Length: 169
Image (cartoon, rainbow, N blue to C red):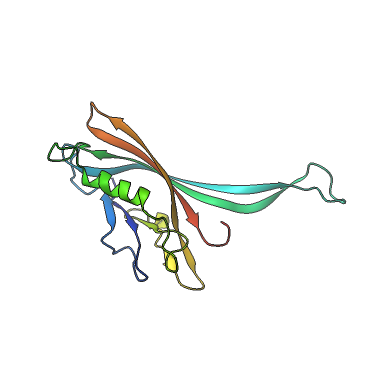
């Protein structure tokens, strides 16, 4: 399994080296202790299709409008959901919950989102947020869904991130 780093930027110069991150699929990690695993990444680009209604265009013709949205869906799980101390406190789940409830953008700095990803065996899937005047993009946290597996003592999740380029896509 490839090591995958999901991170969140806050300060103006933050990038993938920030401390606000979760490292998934750490080599030689075991599911009998608190760990984080990503099992699937889905890239779901959505193309816009428009109906032509012009006076000189036959009714019902359709046109491609280009990419409307680009969604990254991440499937994974957190092992030892009740925490290494068996006290119900799991640091990975706490970080995900914090990212879920805190602001998804930082006004004046990271206005398009705060999430980035590094996939160590497929750098084509990497996204490091940028916030320069001419070049701005980031993943915007949409939602996370949890499924508790009490018997297996793990918490499965499905995380939805939208690529935000500041141009409507």
